[in-house]
Length: 333
Length: 149
Image (cartoon, rainbow over all chains, first blue to last red; front, side, top):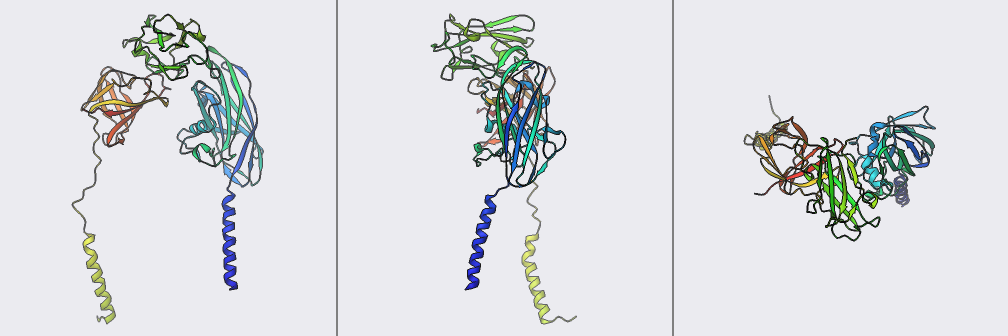
């Protein structure tokens, strides 16, 4: 009888121990405490950024440090950015490298790091979909002891190029063992990553300002395109009152300028020039310029001017709601 | 050599087991090594899905008139849109048995190669090609299906 009681007790102890072991999952938490980032920078200069983060562990683990940066695509940060870090447990500057797009993030629903970051962290209020997350991993994995607090200083240097840009930055620090463990895919909420939204950067560059933050009447995507691309051309008539605020039909009136110096105007209200409504004052037309302007095989477009009109053509809405046309330059830079 | 009663029994049982299993060891000559068929795309194809840098284009852009018709070695395009090529010409696969790239050679210019996927969807083959007709950083992915005759 005594033996039976011991066995029973042993069974209970085993079950309780097992449960406790399962509850203490190997994990850590990452926090970004502060970010140093200039508010303005001149075109062609290097944007210096410092992230001050703390990694706290409750079990020892070995993994790579991951840093994610939200940037405008025009910066081409995967080739124009250098990321290094210093920490309490390393000596000297530690190099980091861009994670290839083919590498899935852990607990990331099979997605790669940039897609996982976009789904989990978002786009920091940037309104034009010309942004991207670029993720960097340390070149080596580091062992961190149990119950340790490690201070990490991440240095990011991005050559921002000449484009005139206003953009909301965002940063993430994580580690390669747990990934973001995003609740977007039904994972439990954790503190496996730290994120920081320090606000905007203004690059005083050349050309038309690419303003990601303020709603605008018409921003073409992709922002870098040639006449053989399909332009997604919106008319966001919900943000300000224009002459077309009550229009039931909106048309585009466009002039293309060829590299030979000719101009071709397509301004007749028709199915080809009519925008479709997406509701709430938002209109859109997807345009293939070669077909729209009926270019011959020898002709190429350098630029395009356009306004929006009603069916009669009497009301014309251009840049800022005024009569000056919007302009778009066909270029891959 | 003299067999004991015990050895004889074992020998007998052994022969019994062998003779029961022997037919199953016969090599089946009627089966052939399966061979992967050559892929053919002859026919007229239309665009059923299109994205630009991952953004859906089908809702806003009219792809309905576009046709590309493949014969044994040539292709012909009707109602041109942004595509791998803009002129008619010859086509080929990198490997007709396991094609992973579609190669179109217009009559007046160099060959253009696009990554090619040929999945079976709803019992029929679809053709998924990826290419950049304008700026190299803009990627288009078209899904084509054979036009019902």
